[in-house]
Image (cartoon, rainbow, N blue to C red):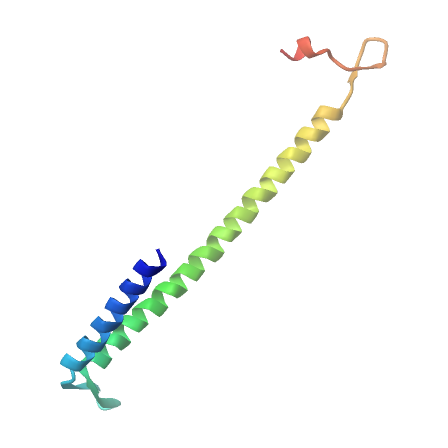
Length: 109
């Protein structure tokens, strides 16, 4: 498995290198009169890709925090329900004479 991973990484790195060498044409980036810069084509593509990876990572972090809040809320509900179940299980039944009576197993069924 490690060999396959190494081969895939090597192929990916070769793709990046050959892509960079083939796309060296300069492109002018301009945003009105505020920003003007010349960049190679491959640099612009890599920057856009990196920006997408970072944005997706932040969205994943936000989703993880939301899911952790949901999990914590559900765990609290489970704890409360278990506590309520234990309390109702331990309450004795009062018989006709005023004594605490525990029902037999057959009465539950």
